Image (cartoon, rainbow, N blue to C red; front, side, top):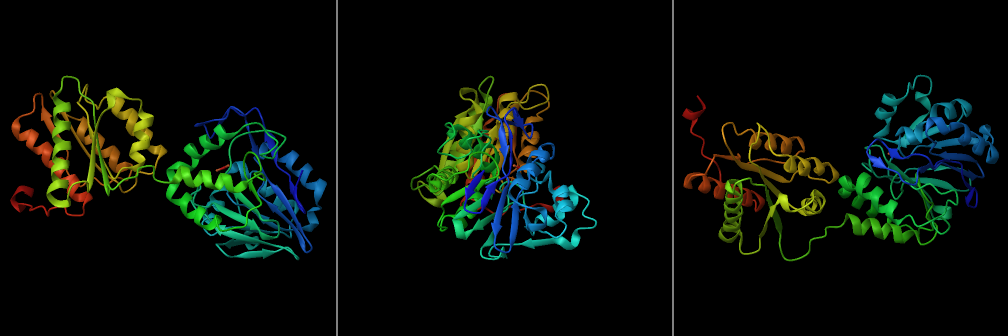
Length: 417
Ligand code: FEO
């Protein structure tokens, strides 16, 4: 299938796939897009296909090029849906060099036995090029979209960006081009939400590299080739990866709680009040925007959207049967969908006789790479005035950390003995 002068699609269609990488639903199947680029000095193959689709890939490749013409193999991403036919391609085109990102080299060794073709591997970064005679490919290092190894490849002569998983989607339609296939907007946004969203900082860095390019076509690793208004899809990624919260507020602190008999709810109110007080006391009104939510009143997804924008997250859960309650775990397990690394976290809750919920939540937050600088507060049954005061202090200290004005803790060395 011609994509541009001297460029052919040589990938594979997988219309019956219904889930990808176990976690992703694929109602419309997917495609594994691979491309052949012809120059006056040789042919480049950009990406391959999943191993069980290799026969079709090689048939298509043979229809547009001879293996002896292949000088260059580019892998924008090593995940097996793109690298499955690589070992056989290297065997059939023994003169070709393999171009991958610097981060990909070690990963390649983890995926394949590289014995015998080490000398054919060339790692590249942003600005590096490889010539095909009268045209050249240029590389952009765009890591974590969605593996550390990902890169994009630019064919300036045709204004064509081979973007790998970036700007792709799982949508199988043999009409191939975005102006010819069915409406795939849902798949495009769904793919972003489940693959790219946890890496949105990296998405923005990649967009910074790509937006200045005179784009005529985006050829991703999955889904339709974007030849009609490709910039529209770049704009969509920019909008999806941008912060959605606007206003004068510098920092956002969210308090989530669930409460069986009102004790944890009362603690949550004190935590929020303490955070508000810190803002007024040390920052000035509006320096920390504090929100309080009862988890029982919503599905997890809208909270996940808020959490993505927030700077601090404080969770309150009672302990029931030695554990935090299920709605809290549902919300915590949803946090893998967004980037929470480096945010502040804390926990509190009432309990009857053991109180495991608070340390379990703190442990989960740390494993998600949040910072948990203020120890959690547990209150047995009905909280005392002292315990409510401790909740206010938890909110206050967390807000002060957000404002960069945390108070130094005095440690009584005797208490450590
Ligand atoms: Fe399409 Fe990350 O593989």
